[in-house]
Image (cartoon, rainbow, N blue to C red; front, side):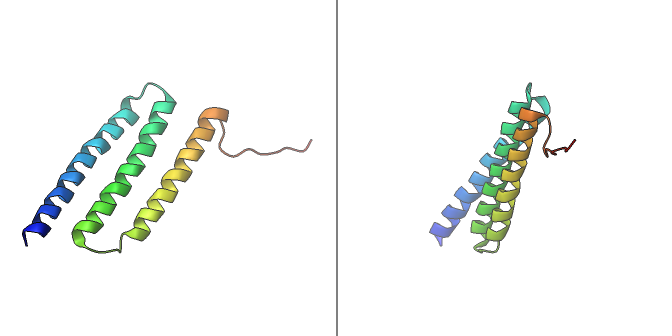
Length: 99
């Protein structure tokens, strides 16, 4: 079927383009001048991993990767929030001390 081959071609092309973005995010984490730049790159990497996983599931014609996509999304969100809190306050977990 010519239609399936064309769709697969575009899915592979999408994975290649997103992989270039993933490499750009890794470079920004390494080179980023500020912690905020590194935070945005970390969030971008999480989104790129989700996208590559979704496209891989489409190529393999399975829905088995939906749980993986959800898990990576949750972990990326928690990591972004924790890192942003660390940038803002200097600590991730605050402890109340009773004197």
